[in-house]
Length: 150
Image (tube, rainbow, N blue to C red; front, side):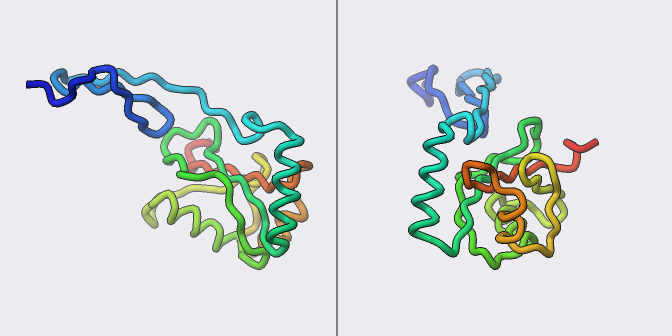
């Protein structure tokens, strides 16, 4: 008796598609290429999104959080777009992201702002936004484990 009548059924698993064969002892994994938010949306679209967000929520910072492109150990977030209060500190934001990924307190990860620098944990999101926002108006943040750096 087969548990799965359709052997071609694809299940979403992180950034890979896994084809399950219940009557076999193997999985075939096909890695898909991940496109960043900037690659998925045009500059004009992103710029208009920020304008409408800032008009509706002037006290919020539009942030895009994505996994670092070479990262393999940390999970993908269920969403990439966040609206965060201006007065939120970077350390509080790190805790929010840690909770969304359901990481243990012993698992290390870092946030790179603008894909190039680690932000000071004591700064507010408004300070970081004013210093490092992208020309489209979003603040881009990547997360990675320590293995990525060395």
